[in-house]
Image (cartoon, rainbow, N blue to C red; front, top):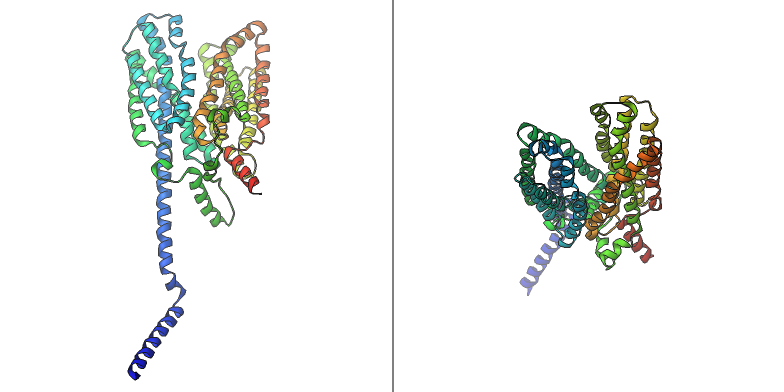
Length: 495
């Protein structure tokens, strides 16, 4: 019994000493296991963030390159038409007939590709296959020699050209959070200018050096190769590759930034969309009054844009006796100003959203559009009243391009930000209709206006229309984005 008591006492003493040693151990040693787990979690988070940014950049680069190449296959005919006329003896009427149905096909294609992107959930598939098919159609165009076949192939080309923009709209919404979307969207929109700048050199250069068939064949081959590359490198959304959504990634990323800055900056949570009301997509879109405002502005912006582009060089030639080549040079500032305008519009609207996070994000972008429309009216007025000096007219056209490309960039982006992500591409397709209608309707009305009232009727009308384009979106001055509206509704319900 004595031995048993001694052993028990010894074991008790050892256990007590162990507990005291553990209690006396430095806190750092006790936290070693927790710190190791935290380090592993942090490393995993860094890996996810790195993969997110890398995949996003590759997808964005594919959008910019791919959409610029869409412009190659869309405008190739424009820059080989003269060589076709000389080689095949085609008349101007025949050349006009070949392209006459293209705008109608293109307008419907943008809508249908948007619906398909939302239904299939794979904008990359629609974008890539459309680009490959437009490439093959340009190649096919180079192999035929009759007007009916030219027209048939070019209408088919129009049907697949719309597969470029609306899938990109959906991918931009999927990959970029609201706080920085304007910057990325406007940068993507610059692919319009890149493609428009390069295709005269490519198609026109090949046609002049070899033949018009080479001018169609070159862009076609480039489009097929680019489409295949896009299919295998671009990704539809972060979630499809096991990554957090753009809004969730931004919340984590900005949360870390706010801790470093000592602030409290909150990103909109993507989880809000999971609780969205189960309502038919079409009903959701047609009930959205903000979309109707954007549609009205889109019509007027394209109506004014096409009116100026169609008639500005005629005004300079007829009114001041300037030769055709010099008149074309004087209006060339439009595209350069447009490139600057689209980039600045995205940057400024993003800055406003980050500067005033509690205000309606869609409304802040709308305010930028209104400012741009006022600049457009001033630019048109200057083109009319300033002395006919080449520099003044070039600057006026550059200012007009700047003012037109701003709303042109923001309208679709802001519209799709007010609808659920699942309907983003469809909303973009719907907003394409008024834009194309505006372009199509600009020809005859302005021609009759100039014929009846001359330039003194043409320019005041453009000024008024620019002001109208601003007025139709005033109701959206304070409009929230879709996520903001859902967040406010959830907060109100909790209260």
